[in-house]
Length: 403
Image (cartoon, rainbow, N blue to C red):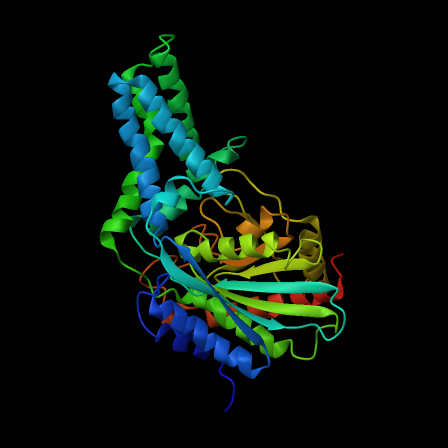
């Protein structure tokens, strides 16, 4: 049987069933379908279960809803309000860089899994290349209206670039409220009501937008985000057969729970670093996340503050751009909100970066987290170009030609 095209494979995955949320049979069915094709190529499959909470948006709703409530509490009990605000700010700051979970640890969890497919090195391993793409799909809501995304991702005035980090602004405002209420509780200074309202506004808006997502409880098909990355991983496994150096190991990770807050990638990163199964010295992680419906970019991670891309990866992308000057250059895009599966690896010192398509008109991929994110609305030509760039980049990294 002839192997399917990337779009045909993607369509099959989408048609396995709706509501491909973390921890659902549909998520696992998509992973298993991809695993079958990888196993037929000789890859060794390894299922790694873990537990994670199912909704990122319920988590955000609770964090920033508690912050808004704390402002009301602070009117009569300012020290309690300060404590609650400090808890929220600390909890989300720690969670944003995937270092620790505080409030989120109180949420009920569900079992999900990562699928690791490994093509071992044929000689003594010099380098491990990890491709990671998530199989789960996202919730939708007014938060993902293209007009709102366009406003939210608009470049701020010079010197105010940090304000593009929406969750950074909301978290900072919560920390400021903790300070204001601490001052009031110590009888140093009581902020006027209007100032308290202004400072609380970012947290309140964040709460309301995420509440809308939770109440809708609607899941998108997720063709571009991220069945495109999943089908690309398998397509690349075919294309790279016999072309990698003998001392390079290739691992393909079809992760779960990315849309629930990069849960699968976090649990995997925690596991492989604790056991030293993978180390930053011999492992490079390349995320493939939404490879259509925009222009291919590499992402600078960081929800509250930027996390620089490893210089070796920047050099490899630049070298690939220079090798084919007739093609559009793949440049850096700073994530304004959220994260991809490479974030837990970046914060643990791994050279890691994600490839993603961004429509410059809206600051996100077309159909991003919308019910219209179906295989019929996927830009097949862009998907093909993205896979070709990923293929060339992987071969360059495999040969150690970062410059």
